[in-house]
Image 1 (tube, helix red, strand yellow):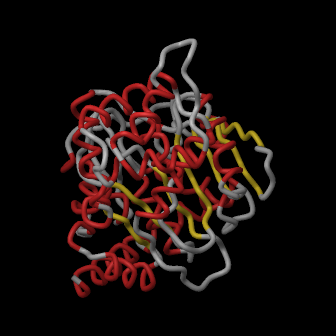
Image 2 (cartoon, one colour):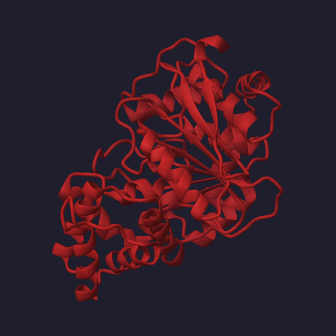
Length: 349
């Protein structure tokens, strides 16, 4: 396998004028060889950095997803008409701005929208605050649940979390390489649109650079996915910014993308993101929000909650989504959902 992998490495790493792109089958094979540890460490490190320099094509990203779909975990299909929302966040976490996606997930789940998140611990290259750590602060520890138990929680509460260190241990060695090379390889791009679910899914992915969004659209088209949302979000996440216009792409069942621009001040919000300080302070503010008390997170929670309630079809428009989110936060309804999730996880684990 190392000799076969050498040919794939030579193809992408031959230099500016002679390098070639992999086709989908080759990209899948290369990904499998790396995940299974069948290439040498020198080859894997060289491939990851060469692929980053070259930049992945949509066909290569599709092949990488094929490998993840073959080797990785999947939550089983559950009954329900709306597609499951799968949030794709950068695995290396947040360092500058507060994450709000766990609160958004609780809000959507309370309204009957199934949600799946995925990720690991504090990981390279940023080693930022992870989703798993935020959930732990909220009394929901996904890190000890085998996939079958996560499935039960998902079916009971409409929220699931695929914790890759436990559910997809083949990726562990790749994270070590990512730390050593000090740069995000194309795996980091592919993970944002990975779908660890066997049923109909609505992929929601964050991005930073416009070319990445273009690759996402082309890759998802190759994967047969036409229901998706792209968000130029905070630190590449799915969280809408408040300090600038939110640039959003809507895929609605066709191969084209509809552009949506949301201006915070037009909806009465101040144009300022909340800085991330300590995890303890973030969790404390989240509880204040869920208890209907004064919290600095309220505008961020409403801005995101209102959008996603509309995008999921729960509310007819953005204004009604904002009103519904405000009512559910102030009434303690979303806190009830958190309590339900805590009880489900604790009883099953």
